[in-house]
Image (cartoon, rainbow, N blue to C red):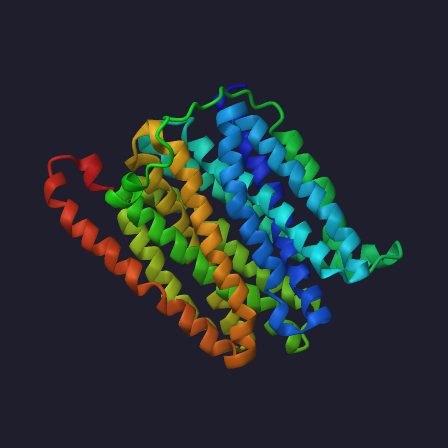
Length: 397
């Protein structure tokens, strides 16, 4: 398989997986609210986030043993299995089975997320920002189109005698299988471990590692905290699935559609500047969305999505370019695990805060989280720039 064909396969798998996670997370939250109340709406989403974190470690381990193609394929097959379990859980109102389903779907999401690093390895270092951005951009296809299918799939499910909310899971079964099929042609060598385990000191001791970790964790937590409550907030204000789908589509459009632009910004300006821009965008977006009115909320959630994109692509590029090659795979998988497990806290507490304090308090508190990582990145940039003044490529980090 040529590098171009390999990138297309990675793109397709990531696009299909993004559709699965976007649609199932939305309806799983609504099922949990209907069964146990709005404070429990974040539980299935938390399971998906934890599954993604654990999946990052599992997919990395499988990459060492069997190669990237096999690791990604098994992740996507786990997602299809989870979707099938969810289709059974929804009619029964069986929350434990639904949580298990979302955990498996999270494994597939981990495979899709880590495929951005596989794409980066196919190009020279100076173009890795664009390569990562293109794979993240794959999420546009599924994550924007997926929520827009909520109402049609609900009607289709009702037409065949199933509960409306099971439609998203029924659609996600073939989507997961197609994602596995897309990457089945990838033939990559196993990546042996460095033999020294995860280099924690390398991550925390280098600006590239620590800044990338801090910014990606913050971006994921802020987005998870806000977006977990969006379907619940709209549902409680008596908006239908069509409105829920449209608002989520606006958010996911912001998350993915400008990814090629973000990749070019990383390659031209450096990961550090892009990460700072992303944190600033997150803060501004939460202020706009805090009003709770439908139009400002949709605009703010679009900006929230793009703020996350800047943090995610910028942080990923910081790792892909700024770390030793022999340690890169382990670090990337471990950082992704930390990012997603940290986001579980935001997902789990999101609907609890919504129930206790309301929408405005939730969004403003989430936005305040960007202050510490922004200061960290700015301080690291001031420390490293004087020593790197003679190297343009390094100065743009």
